[in-house]
Image (tube, one colour):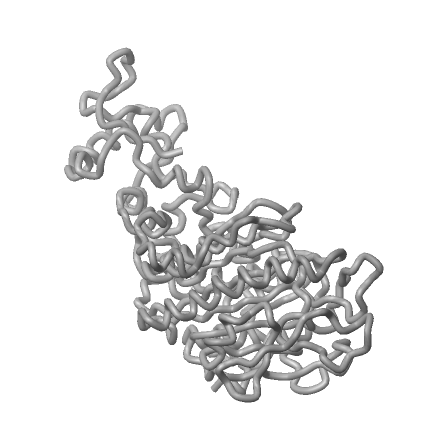
Length: 449
């Protein structure tokens, strides 16, 4: 918890003469990253070690936790027999010849800027976000921590765009299947920053305005006095230039401003909607459309990767009700995001990816639901300079398997890296054993340009 006091307590003798208490300073820089004890200064050290890069391409990775039904979203199986074909109808899009599910009329109107992949393969079948954040299976390199998430790789290779904005931000939500990504073998320094709850509170200065902190010399003198006082007891490590930079982050308004939707144009907020009422949530994430708007605001101020979990798509029962509820809300938010990025001139620099960990069974079960089906899945992508207006691949008549142009999970990640300016045929990161590890085992999706 960050607390910087602007005036000494009248009833306490623990404050310094400049009005900043020892207790308050002990909390400076203790921003929690993924609950792993990393602080902002650790991130700044990593940035200094890797150098700064002003390249600012970004990814917004929207994870549909639980596994969305591929045959009820982007490829309606109109010719499948009863018991397999769902109740949904296909609708036309603004690209002649491409139809998608009826729950996505707003996305249909931005189809020229979008790509749907109807036959995604290579899904592991695990009920978590790991593969959708890394591109790799959970067990690979597990002895050394596993593969790092894309956001962690970007932090390692590129560092921060702006010192006051973490390069990798995970919008953590309540429930299971909402892991915003892990740093894997890169270590906790490259964990996502989670600005929710206590993390958000830790970015606010309590009891003092930034104007009261303009005199940095006075502040640093207080730190020096504090260091002499507490170092002997081992309560505080030596404060160096990175802690001073961490204070710059804490006193910057950029990140806090981006997270505060009261600063947003009301018309833009209305375009995204709220996603309420939240239904079919159970132990998963809410259909919180405002998180998608916040993601746009975060990449706008310098985040390289923002991840979030949207909804709870594990539709073992009442698949129709869940898809109708989740689908129209996702449709509103994603179409608003694509339009918003385009209007701001950001769409070519920001890749939007929407997908889940696997698909759903072709046959509807006895409780009107669909069960797990890792044999094939689906994905939506927009932005990042890709060639929009495409529906890539198809499944067979029953939606059981890829029939034409299967797209592998590894191809999707290779495409993300390409959009970010990284050549996966040459780029590597070093694992703890000193071996270089490639970022993807496949080439980018050729149809996307």
